[in-house]
Length: 488
Image 1 (spheres, rainbow, N blue to C red):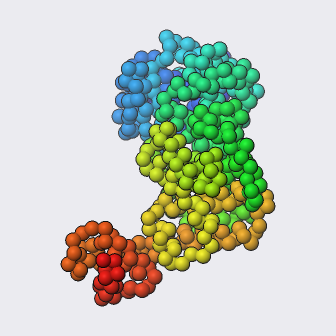
Image 2 (tube, rainbow, N blue to C red; image 1 turned 90 degrees about the vertical axis):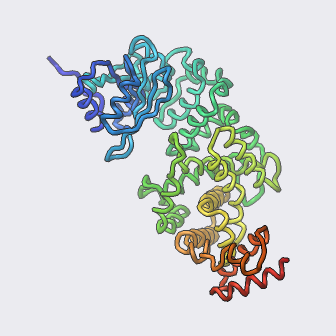
Image 3 (cartoon, helix red, strand yellow; image 1 turned 90 degrees about the horizontal axis):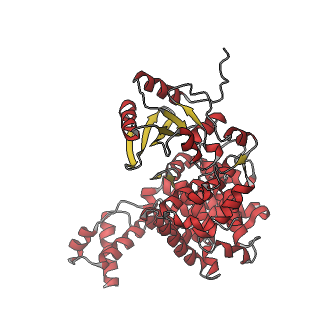
């Protein structure tokens, strides 16, 4: 008897999980479904695994959590959906475990979004054999993304965003019938919760080339449903040194931001910084690469990282030009806040986003930076200053494009290097020097009560310490007394 061909290439984690379940004599039918099966077929990385259960999914999820010493979050108790987080030697693996959506496995697969995501493998049987009632394998081989049924898009219009993302991610062409259904149901996207829209949109921002998907979203008139008025940007022309209209400039800045972040990230290859512009920047950034990675890849929960927020900042940084060409920076920051709040981002994300957009021009417009200038930049911003710098360099690269002048670019690179070196290597010297006197010391010295004047004196003393005007305790006391006489 011939053995069936091995079609699926599973990670050691999946094979070990199967062995564990068999050892525990699990009788409830379990199937790996969706993207993990697709990725196993394509020999891709597998970090997120959907498991469909013909039985009590929450019970199975809790058992797996205990056996693997993981963490569990019950996402929907009524529908029996739970998420299990497991730490492995190769990083975190996420298991989404859910009861069948329909009476049978085949019905469950038909109820999913696209054929390439509607394949399955028997986790308690021959896990290498593909279960494929909708011919997802054929669509993968012919590079087509096709909805499972005629009502797949109408049933859940958020799948429109998923279709765009996966077409770019997997280099698939959207089938004409699927594209037609997407166009018919675009307005239905807003029927989804803001959180679902946010999560699908941030998955797009996570792509290796997010600007390609963003361009498709704009072409299909989907993007204005998520970010109001982006459809107006292409009609706004710009003066030199800008080479493009506001929309094309925005796309290019988004691409450049992504390229800079890729150059900093562990995903960097020899080709990432092969061009002069990125090459010179990445060479200088390399000395701070570990600190920059820690900053860029910190998580906001639910799969969002700061990297995606930086991409969003690039996408929104010129949105204010719809309102005004003169005060567009402030308008853009305000519009970005509105977008972030609509997407239900955290207060921390909202603040980071609006700050980077409000201040990035400061880095580009100021050519000379004294120690006091550096202090006044970094002290109120702290780590948010890194975002301001990254948006500034992305905007500069997007403004000049292919006409970038080497000498001018090297000046910008030197400027931002000085800024970063100040934050990472001269923090106590320039950014936030240890105060020689605190507020209580000042109130005792001057025999005054607390109030705004104490804050003003603290600022003046801190800046005097940065410039070297004050270097010891006695000089600090004399300085504060002198400043108090001027201020009262």
